[in-house]
Length: 400
Image 1 (cartoon, rainbow, N blue to C red):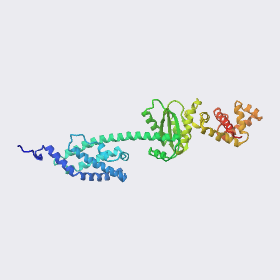
Image 2 (cartoon, rainbow, N blue to C red):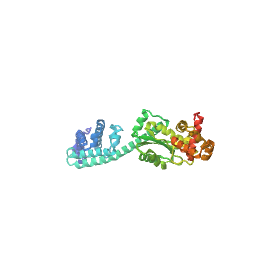
Image 3 (cartoon, one colour):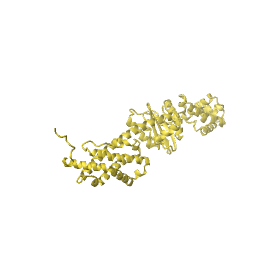
Image 4 (tube, rainbow, N blue to C red):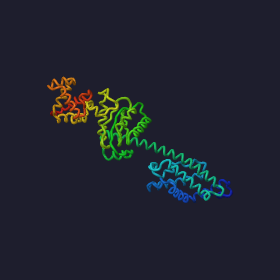
């Protein structure tokens, strides 16, 4: 009966295989040496690594160790594809891609290459130093490519998550919610919280795909310190914030909207009051059709009469409180004069005859109306606003 074959004898193996096995054994024995050398090199050569929190540094250390272990495993069978960055990063949390950039990850790969090269004379079998250096260069190239894929997928996932979070925040602002959850979510989106804010509403340009949405988001971030974008059916809701001229920033965005009115809500203090600006802008957008010749963009406060027509209680209260009530409190026949002027063709002479005064007296009183309210009765559009406020005040039973 023939003898069972014994274990393979190393001296009978071809020279390249014998040298590779020798180098592989040395790599296994020196893995701790490589890890320690890599850690020292990271700390000495990468300032960003030293600035990381202790927890993130420990995760980076695990990634480095995984990279060395993965290289040794692959070196045992170089014909197989190298382990990608997915496996190397598996030991670390996905959030590490936020703390360590792709460029910094490539620096880590380069550090590993340098460490193996520095120790190639000690780790490689005699005469195989060049083979070891070529192997680590090939391995590092493959890992670098797969790292780019890891970061691309992380960026895509983060972008999708940010878009969903941004939509939730804009919805909360539209609803008028201003709780701690809103502040936490908007902080996660990078909202600084400095200065004022406003909301503008318009229509989308068709087709409004992901590319157009991304372009609009980039434009809003150039227009203001802080910006949020929400798509509500065929409407776009943009929230701007910061310490600059928000109205000018909003005006610069108008060409990004589709056809139809673009309404800018009033500037308010902080994001917690942005719901009021959103309510005014949305009501103004719904009512803007009643003023076909309105400018583009138009301020929500310039659409107060139209907003009253669509049932906006805030617009109604604003007109009574900011127009009718001050005129009633001012006395001096201002309400009577405004009514006579509005109800008699906006003619100074006709109003003067009804009031039994000189036309210059009517003109003087109307100037006082403009000073008290900020609306000029001699301007046709502003006269319409004043006349609407006068009717609302009478309906509310306010006394003159």
